[in-house]
Image (cartoon, rainbow, N blue to C red):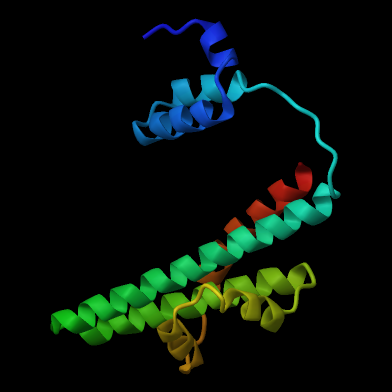
Length: 164
């Protein structure tokens, strides 16, 4: 469908947001890009983005790490409740993945000077108590290659934040 550019330019922020979500949901990248490109530009005054952007990025990454750990824990619970023959293998794989996730996150935090325990305390507000119990278990030694791969993604994320 051909939509006049004036329609895009005159969308209210709420309308643009709804249209963007709908375009993304139907994988219409062209429509989403038109919505992004036609969005009015404004100038704001605020805290230094090197600080505020990195802080927002850390919170986002922390939530992502918590989500990844929760996904692994849910996989363990699902396979345990199914009482299948491969419970031990799946649980071991999930515990390994959790160890890799935690190690990569800890290394990424240390590199930017963030105390791992302090960040962990912030994460506990969104963490399910069962995850705390899993994290207090003795996790297997992290797989160096898997940690490096995951950390590469984290490093890329923080590098993009700094380049803005």
